[in-house]
Length: 250
Image (tube, rainbow, N blue to C red; front, side, top):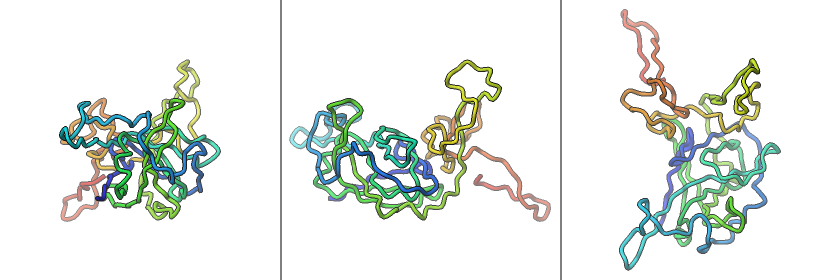
């Protein structure tokens, strides 16, 4: 049996996990991650419970079926500005990254005897890229615990030719006067292009996991948050026979 996990990153939104691709740099994987040649088997980590969304075991009493959920991405070490190994729901990697990418979740080991692939979808057109995956384990955030992971080998640089036709928005809080006493307010622009407060904006609004408003109205009301989607833009193009061309997609 073949299992397919569908992952949409920020222009990829991975279920509720998000990510961006950045300009090319070669990367390394964290030394703390176990090699994917070791198959996971049970364990007492984050993914040992056979529970469904309501906390109960899925399936009938004779053959329970564990609900598999993808929860986190494990950040690879791609440069000297990070240590790698952190569990994140939003991840930025170089588009020519050629190491391994680890996807953590619950009940991953139930897939160990099956053929697994992860589908990445890019941009408004959701162009797909399929990556084969293996089941393994990796150290958890708590000492002496392991988490179940899907291991994706990116040695072929499958994202190398993805076109980066997206704007990068900075959602950090700034006060360039230096008057604020809030330690979370920055006085200088960030220069680390994988800062967690930077978001690639290129998704349709329905694919933006940060948006909780009304899709019909769009991201137009006070308090609406749409970090990954294009904000609604009203513009007029060329005039033909006295009528302007009104774009329908920002």
